Picture 1 (cartoon, one colour):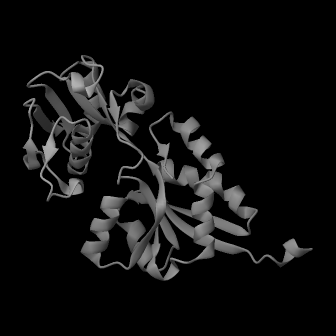
Picture 2 (tube, one colour):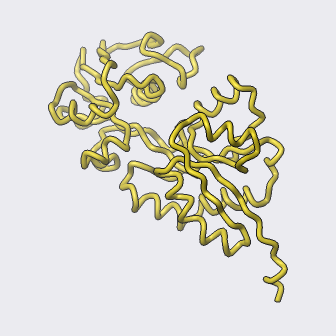
Length: 250
């Protein structure tokens, strides 16, 4: 039979436990049918998966979003490629006082976590809503609240909070708008898709990607992996498993 001639290939992929490794586990049986054996190696930090990729211990990794990937590549001189975004863990704006961002009153208080990588995401959502204008010369991925050039509603920003505290600040109605990472929202029974008054669009640069060494950019096995991760089956799994805390991207 022709099937017997298919040579099995093993792909070693480094991943964070949740949701990355869980998503890869769903792809495993589909890839097996294509003659690809997926070996998933999990990491609990954000340094080792790129070191392992650089050293050839793994064939690709799946744990980082694009701004982090670009910054790491630049800092370390890695010769890596982005093979495609798979999912986004969207940042959402929540409020007990307002139904939409455009309803914010003059001087509204905006609460944001102290996680610097979230600040550009918050600015992008507010800019998209027409509430502020950020200096054009600034890369939003590294922007800070000092880079706001126009703030006609005189929004005030407080950004000294631990990211895990944000749902509590919302529950206590501490500000006009509270920005919460989706993983923390869902942990508190808050649904990003239903409860957010604004949410990051799936075209956000913060999509989590499959990264590989540049020499493997034309690898058929890696292309097949990305294709399976973009399949309807995997997208449906992501949406049903995480209730909007994790959303698939094309």
